[in-house]
Image (cartoon, each protein chain N blue to C red):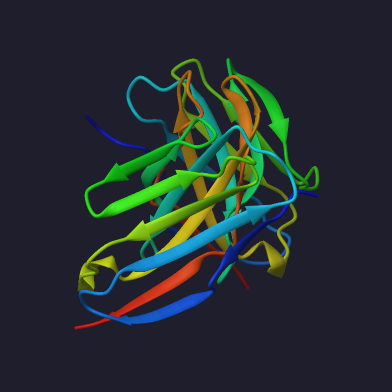
Length: 113
Length: 111
């Protein structure tokens, strides 16, 4: 079945540093989504990407939809302690509004003040 | 504007029992998807409901079933619970676009 490979698995950085993580797939997706999940909570949508090559920002977060449609990248600039959490990429497989999200394994981010 | 809500928050059951989880979608959304998230893993798609019908299904046995009501809310039912069914069960809603918004989840523990 379809799988997404997300890397790195975990990161431990200093407050103020920039962060980069990526997601790759053997399959093409038409939409890429990035979520953040805190322990015991549901994933919260950060950024949605709908077109190959698209670059979208949300505050200090920037994500890109790879031109091959098989990968996506998320960057966080000037990290702060509240950025701590698990970041998931998800590719959308389906047509129209009926489809499913395929998730990566997650990147755990820890920020040292 | 209320987001996606799920109930109950936590649930403890024993093997062989049956469980029903509930989800109310975000206002304006008509599609509900259910996911299972084991500890340390990404969410896995169970199934999706739209117009009160199951539209897509992931690789889950028939013990997992669902329902969508006319007000778009949904239920997830799991029969003959196994220890391996212990997980966080997430509901996500969407409308027209593929962007799915998640609820806080129901933590199910099977003893």
